[in-house]
Length: 97
Image (cartoon, rainbow, N blue to C red; front, side, top):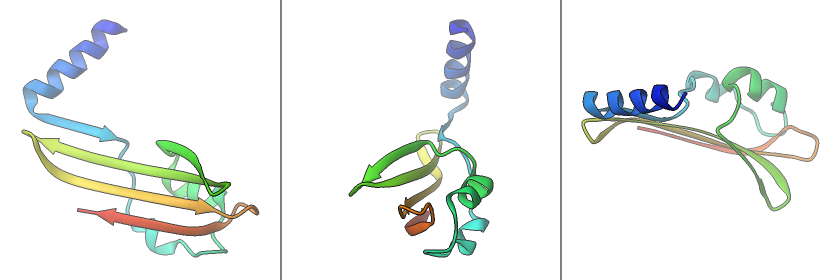
């Protein structure tokens, strides 16, 4: 397992392509509605978040993806979702490059 991981890391550096995070589709972001879209719908559209946390006692999910090529950022997306106590979206923010 360690040899495989080392091989992947070496290949990434030698090819100059380094993905960080997990890529996710940006198109479903426009369908998110505050106080209506559920946690299950977010999971169905974007999959497992790369981070889960708490913000003022409310659950948060973060989806993040950054792609570097020869040391330069080529693609970047981040979706941060805050859920109400009833598991609907309270608020969200999306940034992309």
